[in-house]
Length: 397
Image (cartoon, rainbow, N blue to C red; front, side):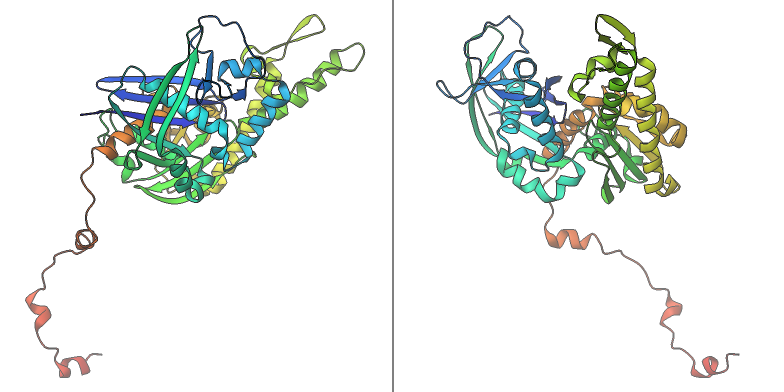
C-alpha cells in the first residue's frame, strides 16, 4: 500500500516554497524561481545541491533551475522571465512553471519510491476563479524527468498526481489554514471561522486582500503592481540613479535595474566608481513611502476595518510593511510568522495542512443530506392553534 506524502507547493514571483509531511516529519524547501535553457553546454559543477539541472530524458534540452539559472541568465532574460511571471495570470502555462513544479515536488519525494503525493497549490487572488481548473489539468497525470544536482549524475524521478489528490486554492486562503489548523490538519483556531477576517498576502509583485466570514469569501481584492514590494524596487532604482549622479564628478551616474537591488536592500550600501556609499536612509524612505500608501489603500477598501475582527498579515514581503500595519490596525493584526514558520513559508505550510485536512475528511454528503441540514425542528405553541375571534379583531382600537 502506498504511503501518502502531503505537500504544499507555493510557486511565487521570487521563489518556490514547498512544505511536506512524511510520517511525523515536516520538511521545507526554497528554490529561487528561475528556469532558463542551457546555452552554455558542458560546465564544471561544485558539489552544491542548489545547482540544479533538468531534462525530460537523456538527449533532450537541458534547463538550469533556481540558483544556477540566476547565475547563468543574462539580465534581460532574467527581467523577461520575472515580468511574464508578474503580469501574466496564465504563467502556469509556461514551460518554466512545469519544470519548477516537477523539480520542487520531485525533490520532496526523493527516497520514497512507494509514496503517493497529495498536493495543494495556490493561485493569486485575481487568477484563482478563472484558472483553477486549467491548472489542475496541467498538473494532473504522470510526471517523468531527470534531475542533476551539484556534481552528481542525472537521476530519474517519476511520480503521478491523481486528480483526487490535487487541490487548488487561493494564496491568501493558504495562510488562513496555516493559522487555523494544527500540524495534523485539524481545526485549532475555530474563532477564525466564526469571525470576519481579512487576509493580506503581500508578495513581491502582488498585494492580495481577501475578506472572509468563516470559509465564505465575501470579497477578493488585488492591488497587483500598484501597492507591492516591486514599487519599492522601482522607487529605489530611480532614487539610486539620482544619487549616483549627485556624487559622480562626471554627473553621468549609474542605472540600477530592479533585479540588481536585493543586495542593496539587505546591506544598505552601493559601490560606485571605487567608493562605497551608505544608502540605508534611501532604502528606508522607499519602503516607508510604499508601506504608507499600501496601508492607506487597505484601510479605505476595508472601510476602516470597523466590522473586521482580525487582519492576518502574511507573505514574503510582509516583514518590511509590518510596522505600518501595526500602527494602523493595532491589536487586530495577526502576523503569520508568529505561528512557527517564516512568513514566506506560511502559504506553503498552510497548503500542506489543508492537504491533510481534505484528504482525511469524511466523504461528501449527498445533495439530499446537505439539504436536510438546512431544516430546523421547532414546536408550535398551543395558543397559536386557537381560532382568531373576529369580534375581538374588529374591536381593536
